[in-house]
Length: 454
Image 1 (tube, one colour):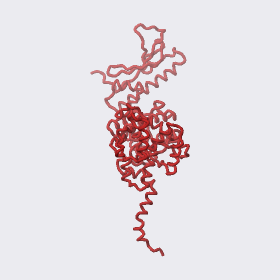
Image 2 (cartoon, one colour; image 1 turned 90 degrees about the vertical axis):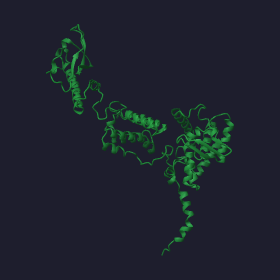
Image 3 (cartoon, helix red, strand yellow; image 1 turned 90 degrees about the horizontal axis):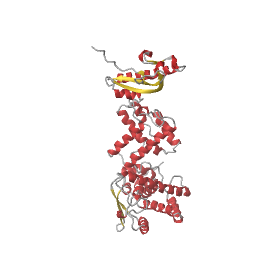
């Protein structure tokens, strides 16, 4: 009978010497583990002469002799600490994973790869982006949300790096190291450093929370930790479509709209004036989304029927919008300016491929940023206490329509919402005029039942 196989290997140091040894020449010192008759070696970056090396020292691990010089004790202590640490990691792996030790595992441990971690050494940002990609591939999220999620995780890396909270790299952390305290610090950092609003922060947290829930299912983080993480949202939000999820009541009053119109009439900057025309068109076209203004083609317009028929970019559903006379006048004006163009407004190139999600996303971002930067300047000059953007036109139309008596169902259809639930959840609290008007309609009936107060 041969000797029984050792449960796990022990490391030892060896000089990497040639067949012809020169006693006065220093040779590289390697750390070696042998398993299944295969040796795994890693350099120590030390060079030792054969005469200064004792292969049988430290119980066969090898050690440097005193003849090396005054540094020999410190170096031996360093070598001993290194090999004992690796031995303990291998022993721990064997205890958690009986009969699964391989040369590949030993190699990973020697390379400081965390194979014995519960999270298997998964990087949290990469883990989250992989989860986003999976949701996108299964059509559970749209391209915009996928790209925004990736962008948000890059900002999370920036947070780790700037606050020195990274673990194995300055801008990286393992899945199992995500804690409520870390996310609380991230929220405060986005609020204080990035000056983000609470709705924006909540959107940035969404892929993180989903990744943590998935990590809990995989056993990478504890259930109680995940439960606390899932409560990290600043405000509980209702489920809305992408375009309405961040609405915080920013719309223009009647007086502000009149002031904006006066600004347009006296504006001397041609491109800014064009952006204002797009804003007014979005308003008069029943709150048309900026991405649909951007991709509006002349083939979508029926001047005889005074309507717009278009497949909406966000919902991918065909939508019919009645066009008011002001909307028609704006379109006729642009038709004179661009008689041979494909797209109504000069926001995208004629050869834009609407089926290319990445190209469309990039063009939308560029166009929206350009328009909103210009509109924001206008808003500042008008003294608005919020940033003027194309989306303000959509919200202004919705509130004007509701406050002038249009039913929630009709406004929902004009906006292109999937259901009236979305419209009600977004706009109901901004409707004091409508509510008062509705009560006034039934006042005669109610007045029949007024008690005589003694």
